[in-house]
Image 1: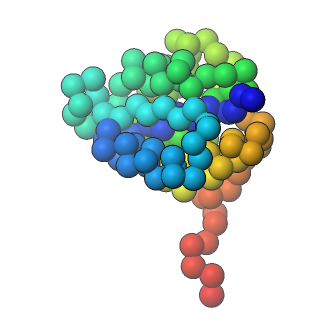
Image 2: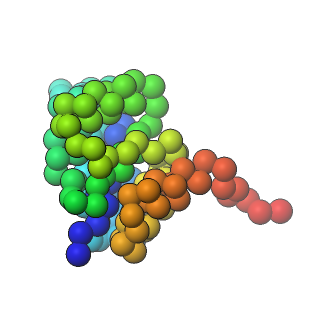
Length: 130
């Protein structure tokens, strides 16, 4: 069975390593790749790292990309253009919460559109219910 792959992008490699470790605790089958920091491990993002992560996570079910902030989306869009894959979507979702939910949904065999939609719903979810 193939799954929607997930790419986690952050300006810090430590941030995506930590999220990857957390998400792996709940979902072991989904391909999850990280692209954190610059090529020399400084704070920033790398188009080449993102491109490589997309290619490793890619399957016929596609890939969802989640990112932290700022220029990460520009580099994600550029890497996506370079790969030429059409079945890849960038989710407008919080990196941690969106990644967690996306991994669970992908592990249930959901489609790319379903995984992206559920990840994006974490933008408006309440953490405290009163």
